[in-house]
Amino acid sequence: MDWVLDCSFALSWTFPDERSESSERLLKNLSQESLLWVPSLWWVELSNAMRVGLKKKRLSEADLTLAMDHYGSLRIQTDFAGQSDYVWRLLSLTREYDLSAYDASYLELSQRKGLGLATLDRALASAAQKAGVKLALRHLS
Image (cartoon, rainbow, N blue to C red):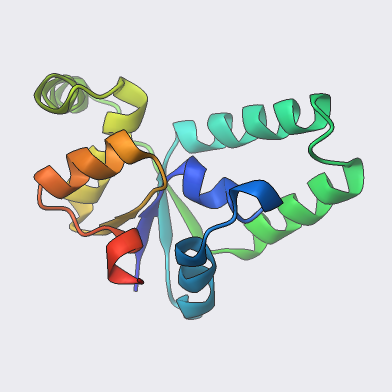
């Protein structure tokens, strides 16, 4: 099964204090064919989280290498939406659900692709639930 993967969910596979049963379960249930869709900003969020993790000594260089190898082994598909109609869709979601544009990009991608959302972000999960988007947190529990 394919999912839209937000950074909070992915980072729970790297940082032990952020682990969750749902994220571990999703990882175990991925098939060889499963795609994890991400908006292009996901890579920026991931890079920043890794930088902060190193700076705050939550990650060692070896941990970073293992984490990046792990992400590299997943079938992550980057979505490069970005036309003016995309901006209008994001703005609409930010206003309707009081989300940042960053979080709205995950919700928009889930809606456009008709896929469930894997997030540990409470505000985003709440907005997704209100929007009728399936959540990995509930689906895998």
